[in-house]
Amino acid sequence: QVQLVESGGGLGQAGGSLRVSCTASRSIFMLNAMGWYRQAPGKQRELVAAFTSGSSTNYADSVKGRFTISRDNAKNTVYLQMNSLKPEDTAVYSCHAIMVVTGSTRDYWGQGTQVTVSS
Image (cartoon, rainbow, N blue to C red; front, side, top):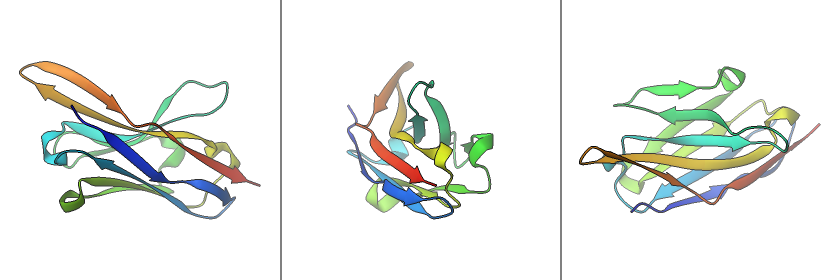
């Protein structure tokens, strides 16, 4: 089992910055992937940014150049730094992790944190 606890987010202004954090209950070295999804009202959940195999990263086209995912292995924490915010970044941001155990893939989700960007 892996618990994911998010923090940060809140209200930001267009052009501004916010950061969200996700702390895992176990070493993130044990995880096969970890990152952030978001879901805006009336829209499907979408991948924002994630660490995949090794140290590879994957970003949604809409956030490339503006958002940066990083991690602190000692703190079992992944961060999403969001710069040059746009109103369309408004969504619930959820931390997600994948752990493969004896061939079985398990998905874990945080509770989600609201990010609201005003124009």
